Image 1: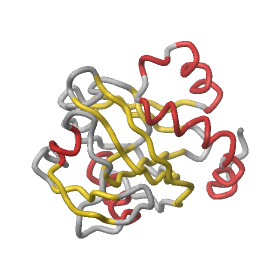
Image 2: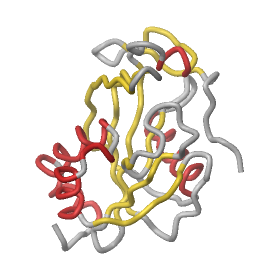
Image 3: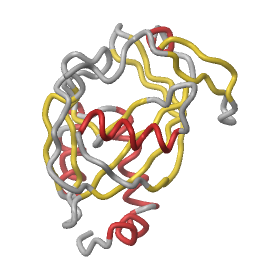
Image 4: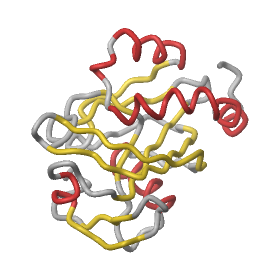
Length: 189
């Protein structure tokens, strides 16, 4: 198994209106305060409504060993964001999922002196089918968690989680939970 991404890959630079303004290597996009680039986050739920959380691999430059959403990455210059997200779920988690777009948002977060995330992030949800077979270079560990437990952990242990998860999860719960329940036919909430 190998890393699904590298620091030399080209990412899509965008402006605040999500218009493509160029391309830059991943490493440069994350240097200093970061360059605004397109990204995605995926939330996969099982039939009972539990969320798959991943602990980012310690190999990651930014927020290694932090808990995060099921999968997150960047589309490449030749990729559609939705298709890139579904592909990356296969590469990182070894499962297929039909993803549904929920919302997009912009955020910036600095990680010590290692660099920053500066992303226009598309957020998707999907149904987890089967057991993950994770790429160890991308995912250090994984677990399933119910929504209420994650709500509580984010309050009790916020430093264990990535900044984008801490931004996305409350919005997902507040504004998109009924859509997720409908998409996945969830009965728990």
